[in-house]
Length: 440
Image (cartoon, rainbow, N blue to C red; front, side, top):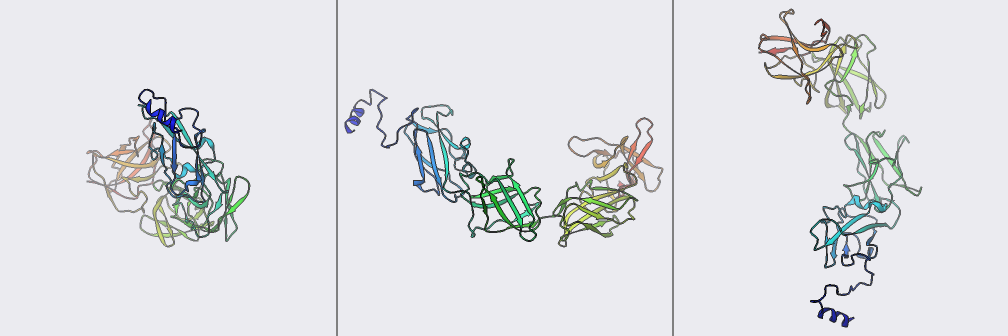
C-alpha cells in the first residue's frame, strides 16, 4: 500500500487519474466515486446511530424516542465535492422532514463537483430515518397543551418515536365526563400531521370538531391496527364566543312572524353565553336561548317593530366585544341598511346624529333585491324635501354615495329606496337608518 502511494506521489504531476486510496473499508459508489459524504453527524443523535451506505448513497439514521427541535447536520465531504445548496436553506434536518416512512419523501443532500459552475446536482444522498420502536405515547411527565376552541386551529399531542413511523390512522377524543367521542380520521391532507413547530408532536386539525369544554382521553390507532393511549388528558377550553355572520349585515326577521331566530357560531355553550337585545334608544332586553351548544334558537320579544337592533353576546359576564345587527323588516323583500360610514359596524345601534361631509365618497352597506337602489335623504323638518343620491359599486369594497352642494344644510333621515328604472317609481323603501344625518 505504501509503495502504491509513493508511486502516485511521483507521477502526480503527470497524471490526474491517480488518487490517494480511501481509508474506509466501505466500497465506493459506482458512479462519480470522487463525490462523497465521508462523515455526517446530527445534533441529539448518537454517532453510532448514523451509517453511510456509500454504494447506494443512503444515510441510515436510527432515531431515538424523541428528537431535539433542530437537527441540522454537520458533514465532511470528499476533496472534490461541494454542496449544491446549504443544508439550512434546503431544510435538511427540520422536524417535518424526519416525519416520513415513505421512501419518495426522504431528505436528500445534493452534491456536485467543485469545478462545476452550475447549481445542477451531480449526485444525491438520501437520508433514511429508521424508527427503533412503534409510535408511542409521551411519558406522563410530558404535559399536554390545552386546546382553546375557536382560538387554536391545531390540537398538539406529544408522542415518542414519531419520526420514521407512519402517522396514526385515526385519533379518538373521549369526554371523561360524558363519554361522548369525537373521532378524527387521517384520510385527507391536514387532518393529522407531523408538527412543524413542536418537536415530537402530532398535530390534529381542530377546526369544526364537535368538542365541548372538558377533559378528554386521547387514543391513537397506529398503522398496524394497535392502539396507544396518552397518559394525560387533553384540556379543552371555551374560547371567545362569536356568531358566524358578518356583524354589519347580521340577521333579519319579519315583524309579526314568530319571534325566534336560529343562530350558529363558535363557543355557544348556553351555560356560559348570554344574549341581549339592544335597542337604538339604549334599552336592553335579555334573550332566552335554547340548546346547549350551536346552533341556538333565540326567543325574541314578540312586539319588535320594524327597524334596526343589535344582538350582544356576553361570556361569563364579559361582553364578547362585537354586536351583530338585527334588521326587523315589514316584508321578506324589504331593503335594509347595514351601516353608513362604517357605523355601527359591530357596535350597538344608537340614535345620536351623524355628520357627513359634502363632495366626499361615503360608504354604505345595504341589501336590496329589486330595481335600482338609491340612497335617499329626507328632511326631518319638511318630509316633502328629499334628495336621491346614486350609488356607485366599488370593486374594492362597499358601495359609495356623495352628498353634492345642491343638498341644503340640515338634518336628514337616510333610507335605501328601490326605484323602478322604467317609471322612476319607488318600489320599496328601507326602514330609516337609526342615526339622523347632519349635512353641514
